[in-house]
Length: 188
Image (cartoon, one colour):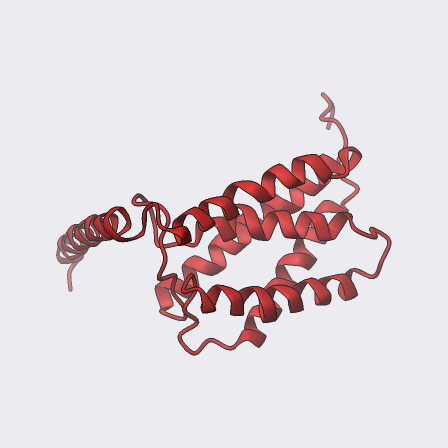
C-alpha cells in the first residue's frame, strides 16, 4: 500500500467511525437517556466530587488533586488501549457525544476514590492501602458494574483489574507525595 492509498484508507475509516458515532448517539438518546441506569451513571459522575469537596483534607488539596489528575490520565490511557484491543467494553453509554468510555469511572469514581484512599491514614504502608483499595475496586466494584451492565469484561480476569488499580494507586501515591511542590521562582 502506498502513502496516498493509506491516506484514502484512513479517510474511509474516519467516515465509518462518524457513522458508528451517529448510531451510538441515536442509541444513547433513544434507549439509555433518562433511564434509572443513565441517572445512576450521572450521579456517579457528579456526587463523588461533591463528597470529596466536603470531606477532603484541605491542607493537602493540591497534592490530592495531583494524584487524582494522574489517575484520570492513566486510566484513560489504559482504557483506550484495552477498548481498541477489544479486551472489554462498556455497554451502557452516558453521553451521545464522544468515545465509548465509562466517563463516571475515569473522571470521578477512580480519581476520587484514590484521593480519599490517599488521605486516609497517610502514614500507613502504601502497598497495603493500595492492595485494599485494589481489592475493593476490582472484586467488588467491577463485578457490581458488570452485574448492572455498565461493564463487559469479555473474559478479562478480575485479577488483572486488581493489578491495574494497584498500579493507578501507587502512581497516584508517588505523584502526590513528591517533595517538588514548591513555588515557581525566577531562577533556575
